Image (cartoon, rainbow, N blue to C red; front, side, top):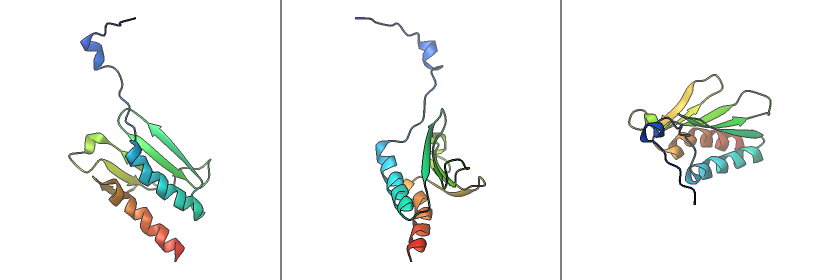
Amino acid sequence: MNIVNIKPETLGKIPEKITFHRLELAPILSLYGRMVAAGEWRDYGISCLREVAVFSVFKRTAENPLYRIEKRPKLRSKQGIYALIGTQGQVLKRGHDLKSVLGVLERRLIRMVD
């Protein structure tokens, strides 16, 4: 059995990645599937970085993302942990509840089906 001694001062230096939990990915991927079926979206990408996790949605693979769904835990007590960012970088919706943030895109899907 190998036991590795880790010094307490090195623990703070290990980068922590922010990720989407399975319960957070479920509504995102559900919306993604419906938008793909409607012909609006074609590809997605997930980035897990040190301060933010990003779910990017693309119309075509080689373009800039149409939307970015960001999770920033540092904003939990301020503006909200989740944000919906548009193509030009504008914040479309920010909040503490992921479903309310995704509601902006849900309304656009309903309009497309009408």
